[in-house]
Length: 279
Image (cartoon, rainbow, N blue to C red; front, side, top):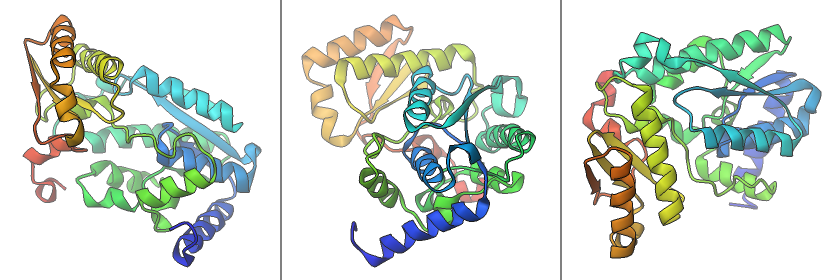
């Protein structure tokens, strides 16, 4: 991939597209995609025409917000933290299958207002071509609000994003994919601050005990359903790890602690709905 003409063409197209935007605000989570977008934008536009905007809400782990702040500083970007009470929105709090649409619409509307107030020409976000293959109503919200996705527009896949990130020396190039805490709660179960705090604490505990980069704790309270990559399942059930995991998660309030034998699947909560029917 590194030297392929197709990849080189994508990189050139991305840089040219960002140049044509002139000045931008970036929805910056600190994940692989938005970090690459920020780094390229700073390279081709300069820091004075780029503003990174990070949303802090009940749905975003505190560690991810802190990572975004650290990355923005490291890249030399102008950065602003935006606080949103997303649970105040009944369409988000209800946690129906279209929750992400309402959440992203609220977020992008707020960020676009800031971009306009700062005199910036466009709001962009880090969706790539892999993001169109799953149920992602948030993509529709971004389009409706007018937020652009330069990586998607220039054909970047997740593998492309990681490769260019690696070439640019970005520390996020092999970082696991992130998802908001609401994705751990089954559709139809109203979102509550208590459950989101519990999930965040459970995942932080698992990472400290187990060290897996990619994992989820799905909150079917009082049951916790743990997902780790299939190749890590055997290590998770080793007595010295299993017993500590059970003890720690029960201390957080879970009564039952289970391990999903299907392994980690991004968006596994979407398996219970027909995403075509819900779109």
